[in-house]
Picture 1 (cartoon, helix red, strand yellow):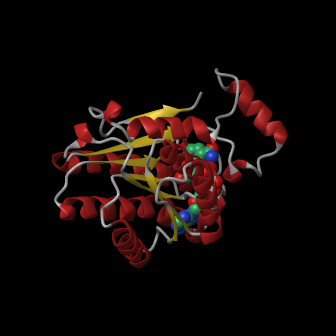
Picture 2 (cartoon, protein in one colour):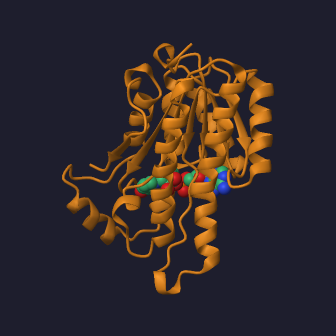
Picture 3 (cartoon, rainbow, N blue to C red):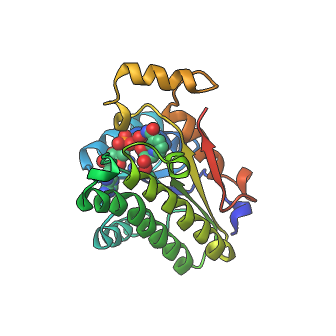
Length: 252
Ligand code: NAD
């Protein structure tokens, strides 16, 4: 079928970075909507932790936890083989939420910190987007939704985050290109640009700074992972069938 016939129920979703924060909330939300979820994370313990929550909250579906390093093509290849042999079908929805930060001011930013952030955030998103699209196209059954995590930082920059901002701006450009190339297969590709979302990624930020950020947000609070998961649920269903190549800010 095509995207118009797509719904989350009965479909297989693959969420990278699903072991924590936003990715975990996405897995929980899509499972709630009826999807079978492949929880993918570098840390199998974190992925299993998410899996236990899915088994508790959405027990009727066939979920699985899988370890993969999204920044390595051989790991992504092995991941796709595992998903294919387990579910005998390609994922219909893929959410790229795996991401890291290595903050340093530009004058001191090392080549290694630049490369490692670009490798996970941008190359990892490329590898999964390509692999999922290839698996849908080879299956001969068009239709799907690829949802990539950018960041508002990719649009406006942020002190100490030159590497991160570059990676997230790259994710937007990649996603817009994927949207144009994959439309003929019924695959929609969109970027979510979260603002400040309280997750393990941001838990090192001092309370004083958090309060200051919250005070600058018109809706008066920091974001929650569920705020982003709600938008993923929208982008995963036919309610968003005429949206592709979009960047949706979720910043309060
Ligand atoms: P998080 O640190 O809580 O979760 C990220 C997950 O990605 C972790 O479970 C980690 O193990 C996994 N991961 C890291 N490297 C990996 C790799 N190479 N392969 C597979 N998995 C890997 O972070 P989060 O706050 O949930 O962020 C999720 C996404 O949202 C990231 O892409 C992040 O850049 C983006 N984002 C977050 C915020 C925020 O304020 N939290 C804002 C904007 C964008």
